[in-house]
Length: 170
Image (spheres, rainbow, N blue to C red):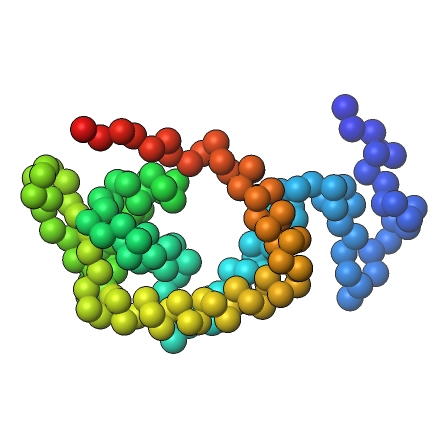
């Protein structure tokens, strides 16, 4: 049970001064809060940077995954990005509608749809990579190379157990 004293501000000042920064209280000790705030900063900067291309972070990720894995399936990408199939279908439909990718039936399994970048998709991805590189630098330059490596490896530990386990195919 929470007692009133547990909710008392750290400086014992019960009055919030209008216009001042909010005290974060116990949020300052919560990893998820800091991850969320970092994500907001990165998302806002990314959205502004990619405004002219009109690519979301998820759309960029899908284009990158297709470029790195030609003929990959929607399901494989959805699994990699921890997205549900309906969301993935809508995202692919949007990219296909912009002529950035195409779907083709697999020559191995007709139930499987393979994804390939179109010539337009390759061009847009090149432009997006240049923009994304500058966006990334605005955040990564705040760290030394060693700090950045440790930071990224630490973040990977948080989500490593949600990534799909690769399957062996015959």
